[in-house]
Structure formats: C-alpha cells, structure tokens
Length: 101
Image (cartoon, rainbow, N blue to C red; front, side, top):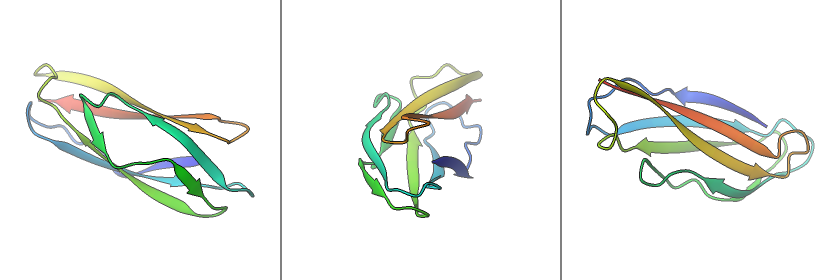
C-alpha cells in the first residue's frame, strides 16, 4: 500500500480549519483490508472508515485539522494510523504537518 498526498497541508492561522487529502493505493495482488483507523479526534475530523481496497484500486482520504488547540507560530505533527492486512506494513502511518502561523 502506498500513501500519496493529493492536497498537502498549508500553513494556517490558529483557529482556521486545514484540509488535507491523500490517496491510499493498493499496489498488491490481494485486497487491502483496513481494520481500524486511529487519530486524535480533538485535532482531526474525518469520514475515513474501515473497509477493503481491491488490487490496483485507490481510495481518497480527507482530513480536516482543527487548529484552535495549537500554539501560535508552531509546527505540529498529527499521526494517523491504519491497521491493515498488508504483510509488509500492517500499520500504515500518515503524518499530517500542521503549521500554525
């Protein structure tokens, strides 16, 4: 499985919502099963769910970052973890960079 940025995060003012998008591509020969998605819901909103991605298919993942709890003039890393059946990468880590002006 490969994660690729579609819309990267851009610096935002504190309190302004940030939106980022990624593509999750299944480059394997079998279906990629996403069993669980974990992130801090105080910082991120998303409708990303568990499910299956067929061989050669991709799914767009959208996240909205809530910036009101971040310090002004800070660089924050938000971790999103996908629990999958990928034998080489059972845990896929997505790092969202939230730069607050």
